[in-house]
Length: 135
Image (cartoon, rainbow, N blue to C red; front, side, top):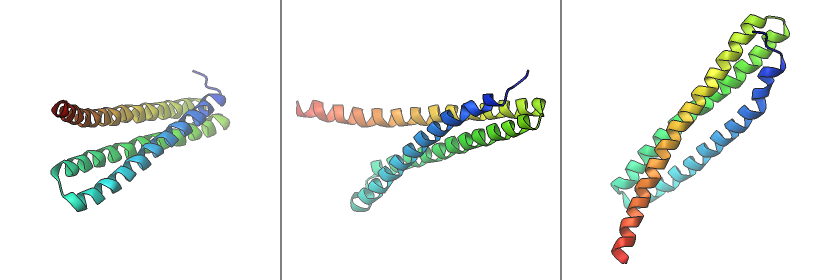
């Protein structure tokens, strides 16, 4: 397979936007954790501790998403350098590695989103039970 220098460059804009989205998720969860910590210091309820544990797991997953995304970008640039110096075979393999790392980042992202959805469903079920009590 002959890979042109422009092919790995296509990942730059996509990977940059993905990393920005991951960073925004991280910052949002960090803000929620800080608020829950303050709430726990005042109320010390078990549900807050469970929610903090869930968010901690999600933060770890987001860190892995970011790591795989950055490595994908790094190996994409490295593939471009190899293609630039004429090492097409190694450039192709390294670009393939960067694509696999991007796929790993997406897979971990899917895992993190599924955890997030489960946590939201727990909150929604609690709210629905409260609504039934008041109606």
